Length: 120
Image (cartoon, rainbow, N blue to C red; front, side, top):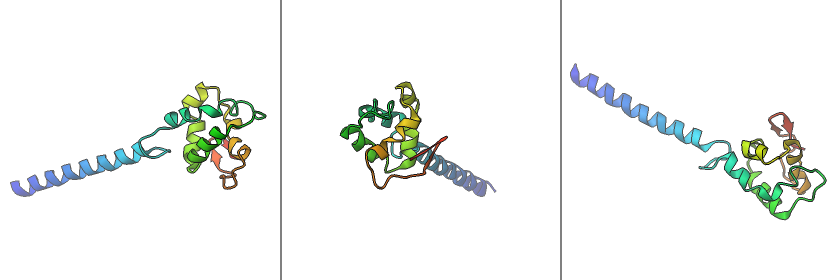
């Protein structure tokens, strides 16, 4: 009786460790995948600061390059533009979401819901 109980305890512990590892990988991936967070990615959009606050401002090429990179994952782009870092930098999400269009990206995710906003 003792051997089966010991076996069940070991199997249970292994299952627990495996499930914790899987959950950690999924939660750690976040919207932007890998080991990055939307707040960290928002720092890469510093060249977009003026364009994200003023819809008539010219969008610098360096901004378009960063948005194109992040925008390959629309969920990540939304999370970045709605992040605390973006908000504290004065980003207006409604204006910021126009940047892919203003960069003339042909394959942008038009109509993608980004919180209360929609990508134009």
